[in-house]
Image (tube, rainbow, N blue to C red; front, side, top):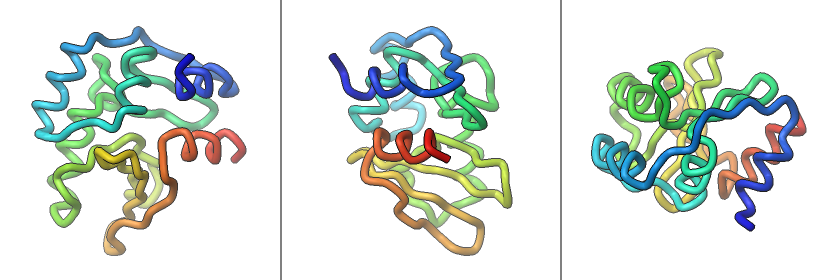
Length: 133
């Protein structure tokens, strides 16, 4: 079984949407001109988008507030110094802080005026840390 899917299923207070097709994922990657990390693709395929506790991860869904394409496009405009290969996986909602992932799977946090800081090596590591906070 897929580890990221099992991990997500174990998150407290989990709400999920419908999983997405490979075609929807490829379309989102094309719109953003990047490639999603394998774990993020697995997450999208299984759940589309999730909310757990106070965390809302972006995904492929109808809500522009949670859609990875619309959130990332807006964030790229506001953060032009961040590599265009990165995409937003979570808008923290405090002081403009965003959580980004690169195609290799590493997770970074940006805060306006401070650039990127690596916060996890993978989506699994990030979710494990967030589930404990």
